[in-house]
Length: 320
Length: 320
Image 1 (tube, rainbow over the protein chains, first blue to last red):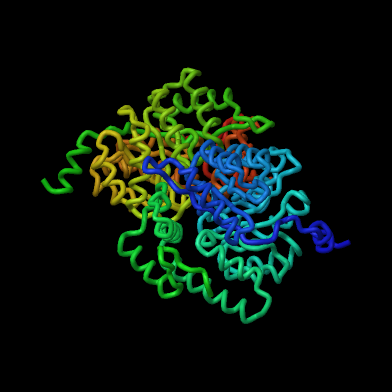
Image 2 (tube, rainbow over the protein chains, first blue to last red):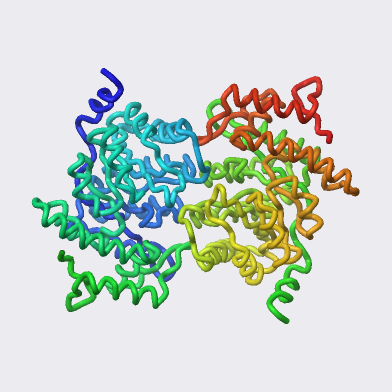
């Protein structure tokens, strides 16, 4: 059996859940404490309105701006509120291995469906061997067969890409543990090549417009910050059964993407969420983020109004 | 009084200590635990052999690969061993504000002369206002007038530069607290412009070859990883009183710099330290670093042998 066939055999039974995951935002009180009740309510809404699961405390959730202790307290609060941990893939990455191990182990012990882990992102240009060792050390130190690890490729923020060769080596070394990858590069060819090299791997692009494509290519779904807003449209796209519906939904989602990406993405999406809910806490951001200016916010809402109708309240209707 | 004069008045009494700081490495045991006894011995040697102070747990010290708890334990160990905290400027930066506040407060409470703090480095392209808010929040939350803050500009690792305008704003807002900046950009013009805009500010380039220049321009000294190796030469350069001596020492230090920088810098310098001491613990590195290959190490030592004589043991002699 050659290397390729050996690899394919290892992932013959894909273990990543299929579907739409929202990279859940974190609302803050005026004192800049996480607003857990608001977060819990919204998490419930997302699971009832198109999301198959939630990925909290990642880039969109500002997890990297919080200490390990705070991140663990938030995750615990969500699970204690009765939200199903099996549908959660929290971000547990950090620059330091000690923190990654602590937060990841905690997520596993809470019963989370997986953990989304960045490469160590302080030192740049690591060797492939150094990256492999970093993820291998995490798996060995968590030492729990329930761990399902999702690698996090987001070079525009981490500045440390996850090369395909490292993914392959990890899948070979830890079959059944290394379950998938979130590809936030925005570059479809990264996901496409990965699915060719590791067939059936749990690939989740970070853009909804790739959802139908990745499912067709044998991947798992999408994990996106914008699904906080577009979850119902994403669910329609995942369920679409003819090319015309797919094209129509992809076009709408792409228009929304362009409107959002013309501004700083996370402040823009949190401003939208504050507008929809009428709760300012959704618009608050930890440093180094700054909120959109009034003019930026008005421009964003105007762009969205041109794409989607609004209902009697402030909510944009999710129709393509 | 105009803005420039107001700023100059605020830093009229520079508070940063002058001199040569080594960005101390961290040795590890075979189990990859920090080897505190070896670290303490070497810290003593550096202070007796050319260093005015030590900056541990920064980039060279692999502090960013360690949890807050581990970093605090190491710093405590060094202080408890009798090393003078007033001569220490530990790296206390992290992607998360909570961690930075905890580790920085701990350093202040131990009596450290300062804390070297990275900008929050996960999210890229922050606004100047966002960066200012991040450092301001740190100062406000540490809430201790003994804090002396050194900003850390190292864009090749943090991928988040510290703009001059942000430094000026911080110096204006927190006079007597914001004491200086380590400029590891390798670009002399960054330091030169900063000293023009904030005269007398405690600027420490991350390269020894800029030491005489920065002292002449009113800056403070240097903080460098290579001073773990070159401390005696750095001290000679700081004390040099004529142009010929300065030129001779700068040339020698530049030759050493080129030899080191032709390899991955931190693994290369730790390999040199392991060779000098005969203790393999100095060569061990946390992921994502990997040690030099045998061939890389042999090439490095050969290059150094062409620059510096070796004594009867393994130590390269520090003569220009």
